[in-house]
Image 1 (cartoon, rainbow, N blue to C red):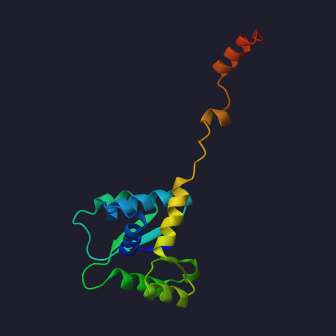
Image 2: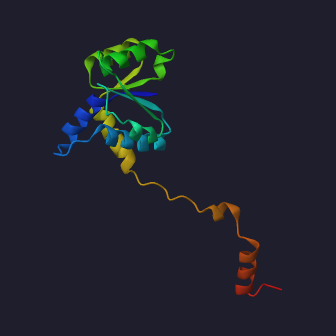
Image 3: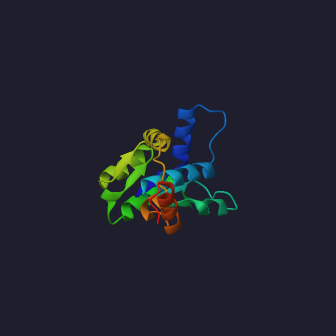
Length: 158
């Protein structure tokens, strides 16, 4: 299970991409959803603040739960609490470049991955060529009419 420090990852992406157009929370979540669908992993991403008033756009992200820390706390505190509360911390991967979170992960023997390293790995995974899907007919075989047509073509029909 991945636990991602959302704004920390966005900050790392801005440094890596050096793009004048910043990636937003929703766009990041959609990219993560695509990655998670391919990898089969599940993740939670936690952002500081309350987020946009309409959060319905975040509902369609595969294998990704999107959380906002809310008022009076921050994403780091929420993530730290999740690490402490985990019954299987060795199965967690914390994505953040924040020293406090990396230390919390090490204390519970969870894996910590810096945001820029995670983003680079994610980009490599998404840029790999995908095998084209086999047509269903390959596994199902020919229909009776197709079989008869090919028998006629080769002069093997009755």
